[in-house]
Structure formats: structure tokens, C-alpha cells
Length: 346
Image (cartoon, rainbow, N blue to C red; front, side):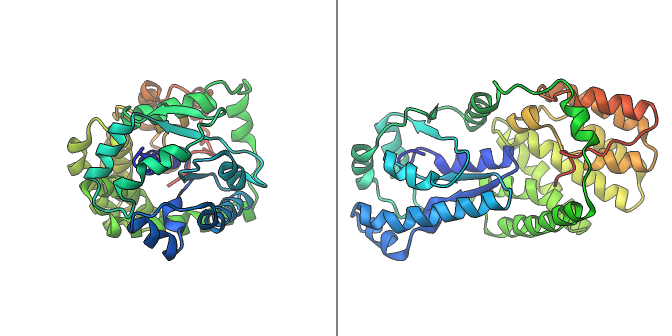
């Protein structure tokens, strides 16, 4: 939450990716009459906002019913607006992007692809009721640092059972649950590929192709997967300081490894696994760890040593692994193949 120009959408997308959730931009849900009003420099009133806020609450409740994590980027300027958004939801965490009005105004003056004119900033600042229960994030921090601050604030103090990894590995997944997850993965993968086509700038394209590489593997479109992965690696040097850089290195090489495995080239697949493990890390990888799709596939064909080396590499960037790496290493050493219940994601 925060005023226009504070960076809500950028941080929201990054958090949704880190949490493997759905990103919702409240701006996309305004009715045409609200958009036209703002485009003309007229501030919205509470009557304008009420249907919009109720619609957003419905979207969030639908995601909650479906068992999804959702990240909403919304101004949510007043406490009663936030109450409407959170109505009926069991758990809501607020993140407030805070910063100097002059910095925000300068951002708005530079923005060319949005209907919110800089002239309305003061009306938003006047309406803003600063939340008392939010994680406060400075707008001037790099996105990676913002993500890290939010994840640490929300999850850093959570007590995880000592046997959490073992519990997760032993948890039973019914055939119905597996089928539902597979169908959901394919639906999300299709949406992810569409995002590449509508990416409007180099940063958006870099983010989109990074995700699309694995999404194409999920859909068994391996030629596309290789093309997306190569594009991500070609773009990566331009974004070496950004939050998504480490994800791009890991996931692009994972996609290339899965593509190599599909064509029967085990040597190339194991090289790509090692290249994926050489990622410098990211807030997402540090907290939730990497996808184990390639490691799982290589274990299925007996490439145990390559996977054990990859686990060693993962220890350098996955600090909050909750014992998974120790457990998986022990399992592989005794000849078992872990199920990776939380880490076979695309």
C-alpha cells in the first residue's frame, strides 16, 4: 500500500514471485469511469472507491478459497478502505511503502504509461492514514532489499519445528491433490507465457522470460523453454543488481538442463544443474529455496553425484532451508529419491 508512484506494483510483483503467489494490481480493477476521472485530474471520492474496494475484496476472498497466496498492490490510503479489503479474510499482512513526497512526485513526472497524473499526488497524501500495523519499507531501497525486509519481518520470527523438513517429506499427497496441482501448474504456465508477449519494457521482459523458461518446460514446449532461457541469460548482465538476477541465473539453467534431459543429453543436463547452483542467490532463493525439478529428474536417471554437488552449492544461497538440504542429502546417500513436496514448482 501507499500513494501512487511509491513502487507498489514493482514490489508487489517481486513479493508474489518470492511467495509463489498471485499478483493483483488494484489499478486493473477500476471501472472505466474511475479511470477517466483520474485521467482528467479529478480525485476519486468514497462513492467512487466503494465498488472498487468491494470488488478487490471479492478477488482476495476467491484466492483465499482456492488456497492461493495473493499479493495485492493497492493505495489503501484510509483505515476504513483497508478494513473493506480485509473483510472476511483470516490473515492479511500490510506492507507500507513510505518515502519523501518530492521523490514520489519526480517519479510520477517521469511516468508515461499510467492514467494517474502527478497533480493528484497531494490529494492522496492528504487522504493517507498511516497504518500502525504494517511493515514499513522505504521507497528508496532497491527492490531486492525491499523484498528481503518484508520477508524477514513477516517470516523471520516464525518458529519452525525441528522436524519440519521430515514432516513435509513424509506428508501424503493424494492422487486427486496431485492432479489438481498439475492442472493448476499448467494453467499458471499458460498465463506466464502470455506475460512475455505483453512485457512493455526491458525490465518487464527480463522478469517475464525468466519465469517463462520453466513455464514452457511445464507445458513440454522445450524449444520455447530453451529460447526463453537463452534470452534471460542474455539480458541478465543488464540487471545484475536487481532482485531477479539470481532467480534468472538459476531458473534459466534449470530450464536448459530439463531441455537437455528431454533430448537425452545427460552430460549437458548435469552441467546446467551445476550452472544453476552457481547462482548468487536472491531474496526468494534465500528464503524459499530453488525449484528441484532438474535435480529430481536427474535422480530418476541415477545422476546421484551431480545432485549431491548441487545440494552443496545450494547451501551457499539458501540460508533458511529448515533442514531440507541435510535431509535430502542423507536420503540420496542411502539410495532414496526425495519427493521434494514443496520444491517441485515451475
